[in-house]
Image 1 (cartoon, rainbow, N blue to C red):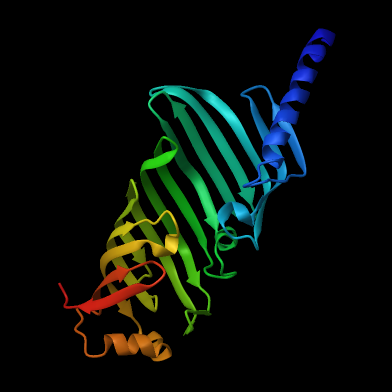
Image 2 (tube, rainbow, N blue to C red):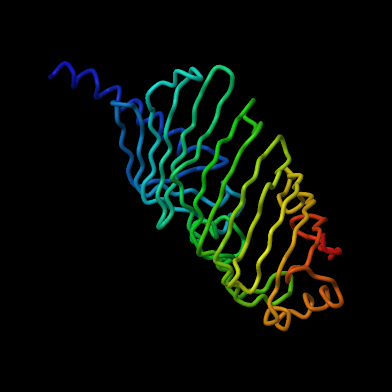
Length: 277
C-alpha cells in the first residue's frame, strides 16, 4: 500500500500539473475551472465549473460555464482499430455526449444522447434570445488532417419557439413553430440539406426545404445558399409583416403553400417565389 502511494501520487501530481498548464495557458482559448480530478481506471480527467470564454467561439462578450465536464478513455475499438474516448458535459438543461475515436486511417466523432438547450445555443450567437427550445442531436463526423471530411447530422425539436425580436430592422412577432427537423450531410465545405422542416399544421408558419449551403471558413454569414422549398404563412403573420405580404402579393400557391428558392448568403438571403411544382 505504501509503495503504491509513493508511485502513484507523484504521477498524479505531475499529470495534474501538465493538464493545468495546457488548459490554463492556451492563449487562443484559456479555460478556467473550480476543481479538477484525475481517474486512472479508464483514465480520464473531470472538471467542476469548467468555463469556456467567448473568444473560443468568436463571441468575446459571452462565456459558457459547464456544471460538469469530463474526458475519459473507453475500451479499445477493434473495428476500425483504434482508441475510443468519451467527452461529457452539462450546462443547465444541456447534456453533451461526444465519442471521439482515434484510428490509423483517421479520426471520427460520434454524437448521441445529446440535447442542446436554447440557453446554451444563445450563448454562441450575438443575439441574447434568438430561439427557445430543446434540440436533440445525433451524428457522426469523419476527420482527416484535423479537417472535417464528411459528416451526417440529425437535429430534432418539438418545442421550437422564436421570441419577438428585431432582425435587420424588421420587427418579428413571436413564432411558436413547435417542430424543427434537420437531416443533413457535410462533404468537404458543402452542407447538403436532405430535409429541413419547421412548424406543423397548427403553426403560423410551416415550411420544408432542401438544397446546399457552401460553407465559408472566414465567416459563416458569408456562406452561399442554394435552397428550394415551400412555405405556408398565416394571415396574422402576413398582416404583422408587410414585407412578407408584399413578397407574396399575387403569387400562386398550392394546397396553401407558396413555393420558393433561397439564394444569396446566410447573412443576406434572397428569397424568390416561383410557380408551384
